[in-house]
Image (cartoon, rainbow, N blue to C red):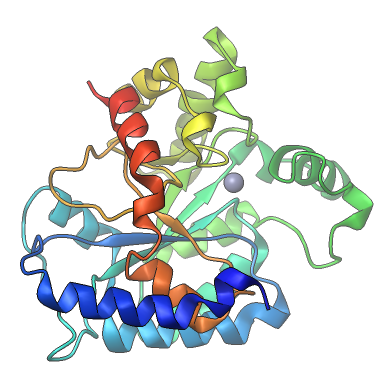
Amino acid sequence: MMLRHRLARPWLWALRSARAVVAGKDANAFRILIFHHIPHDARDAFAALVAELRRNHGVLAPEDAEARLAGRPTHSPGGAPEGRGDRLPCLLSFDDGFASNFDVANEVLATHDIRALFFVCPGLVDLEADEQREGIARGIFQGRLEADELGADLRLMSWSEIAELKAQGHTIGAHGLVHRKLTRLAGEELAGEVVEAGDILEERLGAPVAWFAYAFGTVASVSRPAFELIAERYRYCRSGVRGQNTPTTNPHALLADAIDLGAPADYHALIIEGGLDLAYVRARTRLAQMAAP
Ligand SMILES: [Zn+2]
């Protein structure tokens, strides 16, 4: 087991005891979790994590998160029983639009009546199967995997699956046109990746698209010019920089925690309770500066 995974339990205890003596938190604070492709062997871990969130944190729908950002208290998110009020509710988000996300929405989220955010790349959805696998390898995995190394079940959701999620009450957001790193783009190419992605999605779904999540999520994967376009086109932008969100968080620089379902449950708890937040102070500052109006 990796050292940071072995240390998760003692670290989590220390974090919980420290939090017990630090009073006060924003009543509207929440966290956003990020999931990617969820292979079959990770589905039990995903289901267990969702059940745990329901029990001890509460799960927000995208509309609840939007209301909290506007400083409006939301109705009870469910879960979070007495004495666990210090654990923040979470909004679930899924990146890249993998078909496995459609499966877990129906197998796990529906069971708990949870609505989530799904970020898709319309330019990749449109590709034929072979081209799409090339696009996934090149765009999402950045050449770390070749198309023929991708698992047999690895495909993206079709337009009808995306529309079905929307019809089930989930929120669909844009994740770039074809998952390009925004810092490598300028001018029309940048506008295509940011603005056109949302416009195509909006036309396909016949409903406004207010959410964006830029590819790769790090503070080094986004730029000031990108944020200018994002802020003009979308109401919300979710990064992949760790931290909690409150009504004072810029809605175009929302913080979120990527979850590796292969890590132990204690490590998930550590992340979700903010145990890694201190390591991201500089990234959060930089992100907030770049996104500042
Ligand atoms: Zn992505």
